[in-house]
Length: 363
Image (tube, rainbow, N blue to C red; front, top):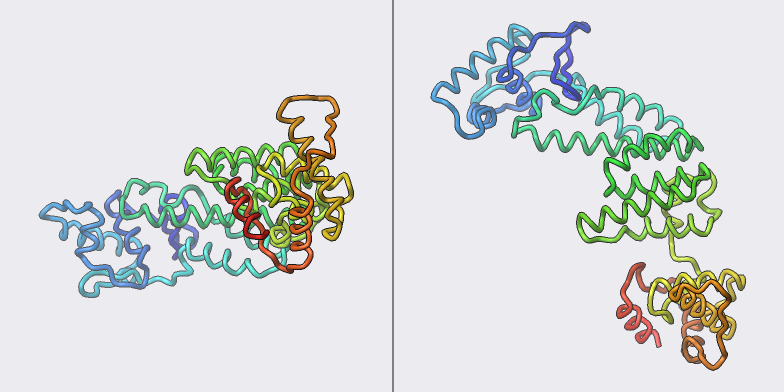
C-alpha cells in the first residue's frame, strides 16, 4: 500500500485507489501520515481536527474514524498504542518521503544524472500538497514546507539544464516560476544566466530589474551581491558566464571587476562608478602600479558621468586642472590595491558616506 499527499490525499493498493471516506476521516489519516511511525495522542488528534473547540463526542468520533480507516487500509495499518494511535507504514510508501529522498540523493551527482532524478522526483507531484485538505490549520506548516522543497527542486532542475547547455529548454519553466516568485534571487540568477546564454541579454536584464523591484516593494531591500554582480557581468558580456560552466562555479565568479576596485574609493556614487569602469575598460584596464593613468581614466569617468546626468549627447571635454582627486590620493589608493592581497573593498550598494569613510580609513 502507498499513501499519496503530493496532491489530493489518496491511498492505493496494487494500483487500485482506496476510498478514504469523508473530510474528518481523511483529516485523521493526514494527521497520522504527518507523524508516521510515531504515536499521536488522542488529545493532539482532537485538538488538530477541531481547532481547539472539540465537541463532547470528539473522542468517540475519532475512534469510529479509526475503525473505518482500518477496514480500508487493513487492521495492522493503524495500531492503538497509549495515549493514542500510530500509523505503521514504511515511510518510503509515502510519496512525500520518496520525493525528499530523491531530491537529496540527486545533489552530489553530475548534471546529467541529477536532471533525470530530479525529473523523477517532480513527477510525483499531482497538484498542491494535501490539496483537498488545504483548509486544515494543522497542515499549513507541512504544506508550506513541501511547497518550498518543490520550488527548490524546480530550481535545481533548471540549474542542471543550464549546466548541460539546455538553456533554451530551461527558459520557459524558469520564466514562469520567476513571474510567480519574483523575490527568489536564486531563481532570478538562473533565469538571467539561461537568457544570457540563449542570446537574450535584454530579457536577462529585465528579469533582474523585476526581482530588484519586487525585493524593494516587499521588504525595502536590494538584491544580494551575487545577483547584482551577475547583472554587471551580463552588461559587460563577461566571457566567464557564456559557456556551460556549472552554475555554482559561475556564482563564485560574480565579484567586483578589478578595474572598479581601483577607483571605487575615489568616487561618490554608483553612476560615477559605472562611468569610471567604462573609461578604465576603454583604456585597457591600466595596471594598479600606474596611478597617473588611473587618475586620467577617473577624470574621463567623471566627464562621462556628468554627460549622462545632463542628458548631453555630444562629446564632453575635461581639463587637467579639474582632477577627480588629488594625484597623491589616487597614488595611495593604487599602491594599497597593489600591495594588499585579499583586501576587502566597500560592499556593493554601499552609500556615499560609507565609501567616504572607507576611503579615509585607507588613506
